[in-house]
Image (cartoon, rainbow over all chains, first blue to last red):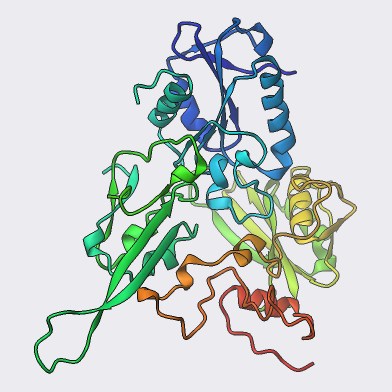
Length: 141
Length: 101
Length: 188
């Protein structure tokens, strides 16, 4: 598959985060990843064994894009079954303000199991960092 | 002033329903009932007051437009800085009166 | 382009569309800005198609507008005159069910199996009609003496909860009701 941009989130090779950037929330992901280490490897198979992977869905899930989004997620989970899926922002969580649209899936959890929901329109970058801490097992909460 | 979340000042709310009606995302749900006003002076006609039973905001739909804050005639809704935290379940994104303090 | 651009509005008869667009390009309006459509239901029984062209050097723009009948919405494609119009025609074409004759008939954004013309005003957002509006409750929980119907949702008698033996709603009744107007059913 075409390359994906993984981020070595804490810079220690323990946790890799990848963004499926669909709409505005992806800009907040970019802010959250600023200063963090991008990974040259573009395939999930090339990540170190035993690493935690967090897949972030940022933005509105339109019906037309559900197949590509699910393909990305399932290819990652085929290699890393315990990869966490995070719905970032109101749209990815439940359709957001576009829940009434003729072409919007009301949240990515209609199609895959989601481990964390981050509300916001958009959420601030700190909210994503907190959620990665939580699903990655580093949260103090 | 940072627009991270919206807080409810419960004692100001009169259950007028304006915020729920103006919200474009339909993310505010309100339940209320009426109760008679007690201790009225002798001879006064019976009066009732609205009592708020439930005030919920579904943060998975809210787009932070702030129309509810602007429209409330009683200043019962206000912006606050700290963003709504993430949760492990979608149901956890609906906040009730106690979560909105 | 930050200087104020002088704007002109020109109404065009639909069968003169191509010639007028080509002539405007020759006049110097050779930068394609956008093409779109407006559903005029409730005001007129047509779609208005609008096209903005800009003369960048002279800092002036022209908005060309034409009207096509709602029950037979066809207009000549101008995508060969302005290639940039191709995607705009495909988008307006699929969202309003307008045929741009001679142009690319492929869908641009909607899935292949999508049925309907979502931007027509008689297309109802079913999600809103299907759930209870939180604003329908009265303060204090009193039973509502008048029915509150929110913007965007037609009255149930017209769409959704209609008496099956009543006549089919007309598109303009649906559109009129969805914007909050009271629709009196006429006997047909």
